[in-house]
Amino acid sequence: MGRNTFYRDRRLKASLVVLLIWGFVSLLHWLPETQWLIVGLTFVLTVQMLRMLIAKPATLVIESHTYLPQVSILVPAKNESAVLADLVHSLFHLNYPSDRLDIWLVDDGSTDETPQILSKLQTQFPALQVYQRESRGGKSGALNAVFPFTQGEIILVCDADALLPANFLRQTVPLFQKQAIGAVQVRKAIANADTNFLTRCQQMEMICDSFLQTHRIAVGGMTELRGNGMLIRRELLEKCQGWNEDTVTDDLDLCFKLYLIGTEIEFVTVPSIQEEGVTTWRQLWHQHCRWAEGGYQRYLDYFPQILTLGWAKEIDLLLFFLLQFLLPIGLIPDLLWTIFNSDRPVLFPLQTLLSIILTVAFIAGLYQYQNLRGLSLLWATIQGSFYMVHWVPVMMVTTLKMCVQKQRSCWVKTEHRGKTIYGDSASK
Image (cartoon, rainbow, N blue to C red):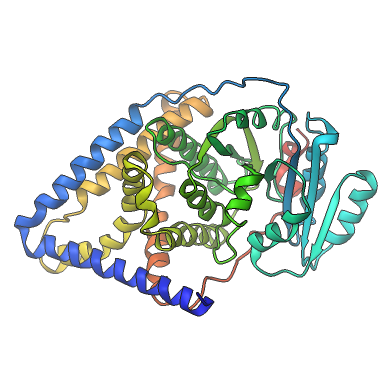
């Protein structure tokens, strides 16, 4: 399929989804007797929600500390001069046999001081390997370009602003002794969480995500790779033909590809990997629009194949696809009918469901991972819930934009400032 045909097919699917959702919501308003459909759907999703929220995640046990396969660490870097030194130092201080590490930095067409900094770092760390190329294909293109030169049985992908604890590989790689596990994602944390309201809320968002990921796995659902701090078996990457260069979120796309070839993805809360949170609403908007676009387009790209994953994963997908993507689209006609026809909102039960999931995830996650109690826990939950409202316009804009755009969105790079934000955290 040609690229123009590929994007046209996405636009057609996205437009069809919007028309179906708007038609369904209008039907519920026009013929009130059909509202039993939303009641039935809410009941099914409520059962799934309760199963997920009350599930007890399994405790992951490291079977052997002698399992030490070769690991290739890949770091795409475009204009990352502010953060590369800290990252490289953390990589070369990992508690893992140096002869079983294969560390690659990809200079993806940088125009700042990144090449010079990498050259100096190679003098300090002779085992550091640098692959230079002209930037094309985004992060996926950079990873695909360097992948043939790597040797590791396990591939670890990190962002340039990542900071890893010394025992990172000792606490994650042994999980691959279980043949059913094809990939592992670690919990992400915000290194500059104390900077302002936005960075504090991004930290809470990561905590909320960690709670949901572990509980989705506990009921046989799906988990998701998060790009930074994800480990994948080499043989499975080869089977997936590498990373998709026609997506803006290589990690979310790879999730579906891995599940479709029959493997499982594990999520671990210890260790965590640190990254830099954005500090302005403008940066947050661009970043989250990209995440939303990549998350949505994979459903368009891999439908109907994803209907072959088994009932547990399919109902998990239904819950999150409906509440994350379809509900925001449906709120537009629901609001219009409510205002101009003096109706009550028919999607209110689903909005309530989403609010319950997020509130419980915030409370439980902040209690577990940030050790908050009492009024501090309540206040943090209120702030986090208020912050999460921004996802509604993000999803609306993204899903509607995909109906008309002729190609994927241009990559808007997140700028990293390094130690000027991290402060002392970068040296810990």
